[in-house]
Length: 205
Image (cartoon, rainbow, N blue to C red):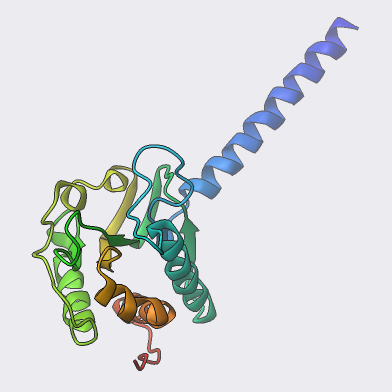
């Protein structure tokens, strides 16, 4: 009886280890693209910018979902994640955000990245988005949150961009942004796809 119990325990431990390995592999297996919706799922701490009518988390989700949908449509391997992160690897990682300001219309679009490996991709994005976004731009990594974004320590990507796509506390900007969220998502997806060498259609605004 004791021998049978030992054997059962041994096989139980073996199965648990196997399940653990499969889960670990599924979490750490490199993917082509990781798309993060900033602040998604947070209920305390930094829950994102807000204005009278809009919440950043909601807009981040709309854009991130559409980016991921398009990349899948174009047969690009993509993992869509919320604010909470764990160790992951990717060729490209992009975190979607919108900014806020204590004094409305003092902010706008900006971009953050962890190192020079992402610099060229960042400048391509800025050049592309500047042709559409008609409001203020900040210099790269102009805040600590952009320069030292927490997810940089968990997501090991060849190129990692944190995109601030506009200011939620500025009515002029939200009037422009709100009806164009999915077009902006298309622009982000287009930028990622072309950076990976795919030929896809450029969105028209």
